[in-house]
Structures are given as structure tokens and as C-alpha cells.
Image (cartoon, rainbow, N blue to C red; front, side, top):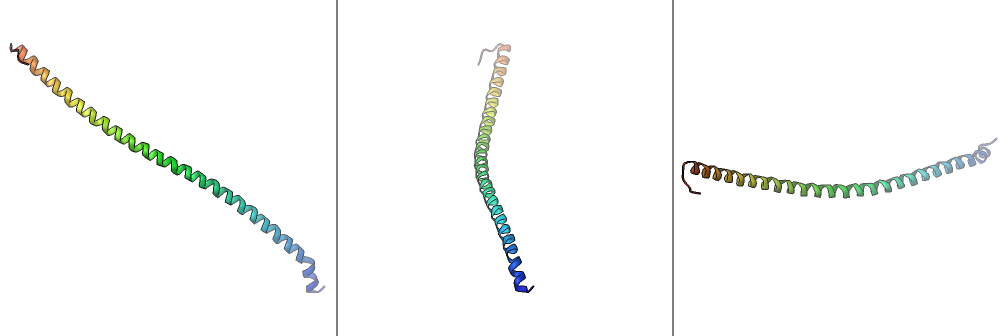
Length: 99
């Protein structure tokens, strides 16, 4: 057989093999593109959740600071009230009736 005849005989096999390879690659590309699309949607959802959680964290921090300051003020007020009552009691025990 000549080289030309062999090319004719096996040429279809190479082309069929190449077509199968191309089809396989196209299928893989399609699957990867779909996976990328899905992952991009997931990423956007996660970014949205992170933004929401950061906002909630900031609000909670503000609330905690506010509660802490309120508690400090309340403690100061009650300490002053206790001190005033102790002075009043001391004055009453000494026979004074000053308030």
C-alpha cells in the first residue's frame, strides 16, 4: 500500500477521534461554565450575607456600648443615692433632722 492509500484508510479514524475529543471538550466546557455560573450566584449570595452580618454586628456593638453607658450612669446614680441615704441616716441617728 502506498502512503496515500493508508491516509485514506485511517484518515476517517483520526477525524472521528478528533470529533469525539472536540465533543468531549465542548461538554466539559459547558459543564464548567454552568458550574462557574452557579458558583458566581453563590458568591453574590455570600457577599450579601456578609454585608448584612457586618451591618448587624455594627448595630449590636452600638447597642452594647449604649447599654454599658446606661448601666454606668445607673450605677453612679444609685451610688449617689446610697451615699445620700447614709448621710441622712447618720444625721438622724445623731438627732438631727436635716435631709
